[in-house]
Image (cartoon, rainbow, N blue to C red):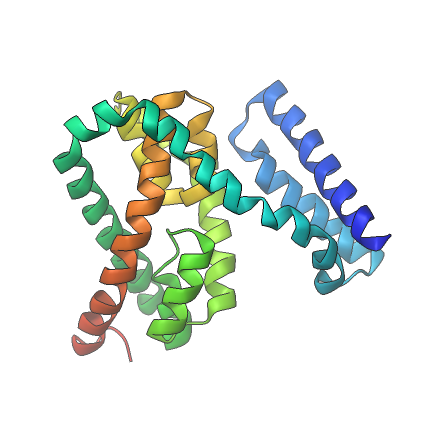
Length: 231
């Protein structure tokens, strides 16, 4: 019974948050952000621990895999355009991966965070399962990395479109690539609201960022440690 209530409550809160976002279209009415805040407050208010809630909500987590696979559809539809810009896309993803790793790690180290926290920040721009594996490999805290990934995605989805438009980004593919590279699945979901080209760019960025960050994060962290930035 508790499992059914978890599913119903999660779906109902997300549906209401989506309605709120569609009506006012305010960045901080992002459905994921609003749903997380409401559910956390509700769980704390009713004294329900996360493990108990997660037993029911885990069924919904199962559908994350098929949802990611579904991103292959817009990729297929935009295949010709993506192939034509292949070199530019690969270059931008590599640059985005390096900037994502270095910026988070250096800022945290400069603020005096512990070595484990700093290393946990390195994979914050990739999707959660990949981030957990990378954090474990480079000496970070996997659960902290997972939380940082979700926070990064929510913030990117809320602020990303306004920042990109202010920066003069007009290419629909570039818009999707930036959202997927900076804010993984949550950013791609926001990019998909703009159209098929944006969704294809975001889906492609999720995959490429995962591969690039898995290769580059250990190298960048090792270089920063040798330079004395990390312990």
